[in-house]
Length: 160
Picture (cartoon, rainbow, N blue to C red):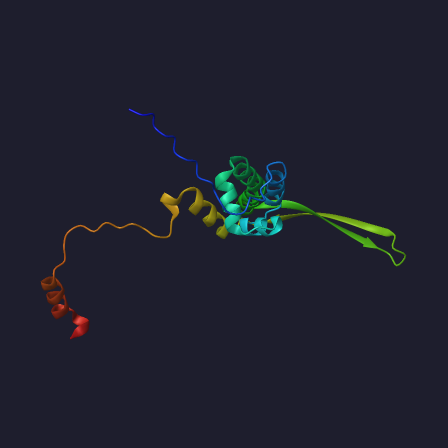
């Protein structure tokens, strides 16, 4: 038998990519760390959102950099939500100046923020969805037939 031919390699065709592995991962991570969405990151990089998605699929280091960049702001929001759910204290400093701009009085007050029920619900719905979701799964046993419904309607005192 004659030797098998190697399949011809397909040329990807199209325009060459603008992706630069020495620039784009670090830049995308920095933008994600600022709290930008994928759409905003794509705009900042001068590309379409679909191109950003393609780069994430084609280049693992790019995907990882965007993902790690988003972790910092997500962690900050999570910590703030947790503090808000439990309530917290903060110190407020009030400075009083005279007509000349000289500080004459400094007042320090410790204030409390009460726990927020909305933040507690959000936390629990996301952390324990099986226990705290709005939609409850109810399993019915037995059966109801048309005959039962008709009999009930005939004996219902409100209908008479």
